[in-house]
Image (tube, rainbow over all chains, first blue to last red; front, side, top):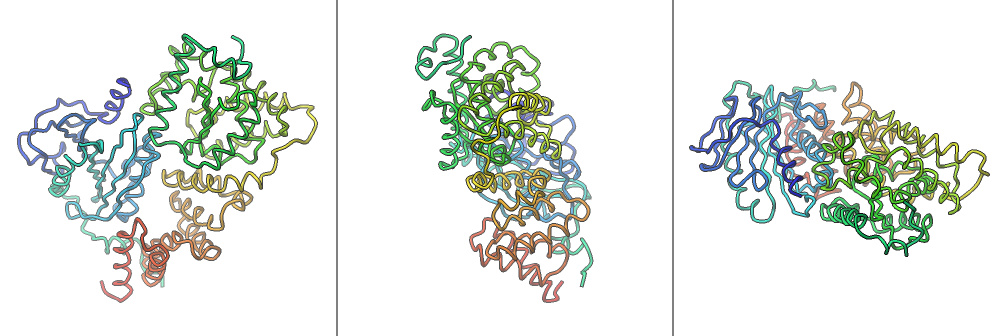
Length: 205
Length: 360
């Protein structure tokens, strides 16, 4: 069981090789400076070498983790090999995200969707998905993913923790992170949900 | 190492073999605790009756369970627990084919292959190759070896003994090569690259060769050939498997399953909706039109099935047909007022109404 715990950790923080550091201030830049986000002071953060992933945790990644990833639209969903599109409706993005989580392993494949709703993140229309699954020890785990696209990237802001104690304890920190998420690049979509619908094709009739 | 003769022999298992059995127990517990067992008592009981018919002397000791997985796999743990994925169950055509697979897997247990294999595989390349795929699936090496298959000799032994049991139980043995031929065709069509036993093409070719040799010259006839009976028993499994495949974005697999009119006929009337979903998710040129056509067919044959209206409403919204979108989305919420995606639909409906009214 120790081996699986270690391997799960490796999988979850894959590609993260930068030295972890203590979070000294609430406001934090994303690894590639494309966004800023508030994270809890005193937590440990780590970024991937390719600057696509930012991780933060207080007690260890298996206990609670905030993970923020930014991928080019075409690489948004690596497990299912699907691309995101900047004109996709939030419901469509959420559908792809759920498929991505389900494709992780046999346990997440059996997940239950607890919440799935449209939200606004960084003034962009996105989705909020909350899923529940168990691990091999029967421990209930919940993962929340808030995601959206700008013109070039798919942003995924995740929180995962065991339901037992950790999820409720640190979920408010994740909510603050999402609420504070701010794009600092120039790739913002100018289209709103309503206009993103109309840009697809002219009316047929 | 002699095979187990009957249930009484199982009580004699001690020492190292007992340790391997205990590992099997841990894997079984992990699967149960992990929520991956497909909870369908009627279907599970049905599959169990087939196991018991094939292995009557082990009745009560070979327990079968169905796993919530669309992958083509079945495996037996060293302790006699047999697992079959819903994806595999859904793709079989009749009971004789199911019995062929269960006879094969059950033989791995009766002939003690799990125990014999456990040590030899530990250092082999197979572990390295498959380990990463299964982790964090299960903690035990025994799970890896059971799921990925055994040595060629053991697999052949499982074919021979499984076939003998199939024959003894009165099943039509001519179905035995067909099951593997059918799976090969599906794997080719779907382009599956999963390293699981029944999705591994070279191993399936071995199975076909062995079963053809074994069944050659056998008289025609036997039980378990009715695809109608099997389809009736597997209706829910097939629908759930379609849901699973589509929710994992496996549109191509779903399309293979649904492009066969005979198989579609075995599914509920709203199956056209799933075909529409498969086209939509595949997303190739022209698929949007195909999807829309299928949703319309589904509405025609199953007008009370809500998801077709949602799907069509979303498509019409994206095509800027706001009046249509409003009609379909409203109908969806009428039929499914507590839909889990209601907040999305409400927001899209708001847009459709606004646009239909000529507002920007």
